[in-house]
Length: 147
Image 1 (tube, rainbow, N blue to C red):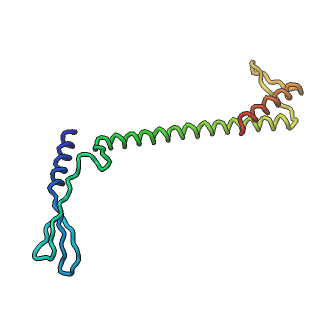
Image 2 (image 1 turned 90 degrees about the horizontal axis):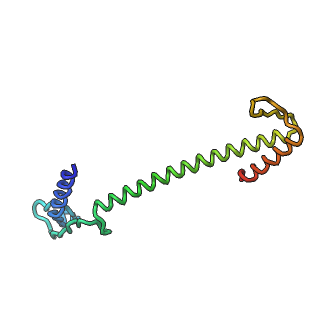
Image 3 (image 1 turned 90 degrees about the vertical axis):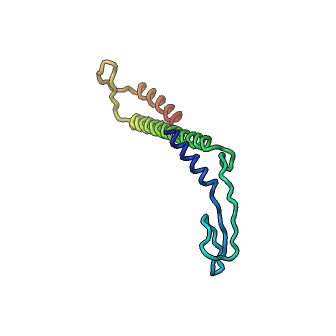
């Protein structure tokens, strides 16, 4: 496959190197530029020597170098998009955590009875001291994580 592509590129470069450019004025005195010689009698015919395309591009890079640069830019763009997606997910999780902490703080500060579950799964109600501790903890959490 690579040999075929290389042969095609070489053939194309050879054909392009043989290209001639012609310039002339037609019967309406319009300047015509073409890669084919004029038909019939025309005024001011002149042949322009076309430069053969260089093996390297205008900036000195070969086709392989430009391809490698293109693939590198694609990879960087893909990695940038993945990084942006990860940052978006982290920001969404942080916002959800912040919202949950604010809701819990609001519930504790409302004064209504709050039931919790212990390690055995049994329900118990918070007394005033436990409520105050939870409020302090949640306020610190909100202050640290909700900016």
